[in-house]
Image (cartoon, rainbow, N blue to C red; front, side):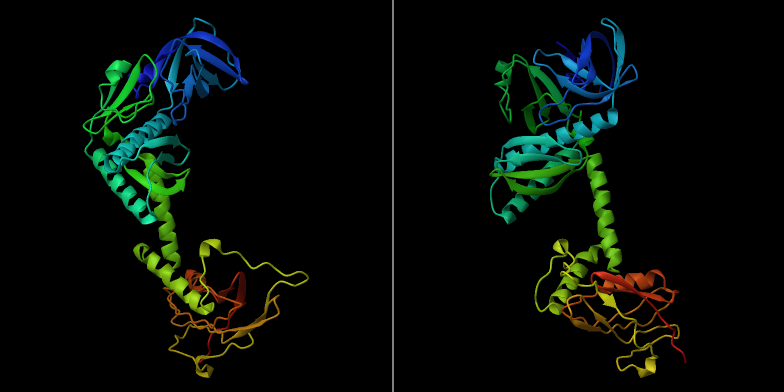
Length: 401
């Protein structure tokens, strides 16, 4: 049986041990040590990685007789009785203990507030998830999850102590455990000061402050339970950066601030709804219209007139370095004519402009795409016009005075 060094110190990453056995297992060289700080996986938490004598450890597992198998990269046999040095990959260990300790905090928050028990826990590459006996309407569930998230982060910010206890089943029966599913002679209990007691064999932080932010990414109904996805610590930071970058990019395309992006998208959808005869649209489900058989792709004709400001009935104040297309015609593969009016003005070095479209049911131009394209290169004599879903490029002539 391999002695589990991580049971007493989850932050131990370097250790020495003796080789007990060495053999080939599942295509990898496997080494059994008398003691190890590697976590073999279990309880929803993946195994550790690292190295033994500079040989990469790609996986760790436990046998039924209590031996810990260290699966090595390459064919590097060790001798029985040899003393080796093991090193646990700390960044991975830190990420795992943040998610696991965060799960204890979040699960206890749901249990304390709503009596919801955790029936499943899994850590994946990007997120972790728990299955809860929590029921209600979507609005009720969203409110409950928000309250549990607030309580969990309050415990994190209070930086409470996390203690490890090794007790017998009789002693464990006297503790206020959140769950009682142990059946061994020795029980390892994780205590979060004045908050949670739970039997667990995984790796954990020493204090709740090491967990970092606990952020719920989403939830869904699954197997008559509520499945909550969350991230903790470094994962929460990376998730925020990705979400912030996405929100900022969308806002930039709409020429608004990040906090105004939602309102701008709602306004854009409302305009599209008006131009599509009241039929709502979901941009996430949008796909190009399939082409009919034996039909040519849409063709955009060259502008039939490029004129000055004075000859246009819809003209507004134009600057001296402005261009303007009055109208053009396209014939699509669906054999219907379209006539679109495009107007923009105040084309300055800052790229500010105003666009006007005359949309048809067959063609819904994207105003923001034109504005972004022109504003990105205000000194060019080329206008990029989007007639959904095709891009067309027109060379324009400047207005003469």
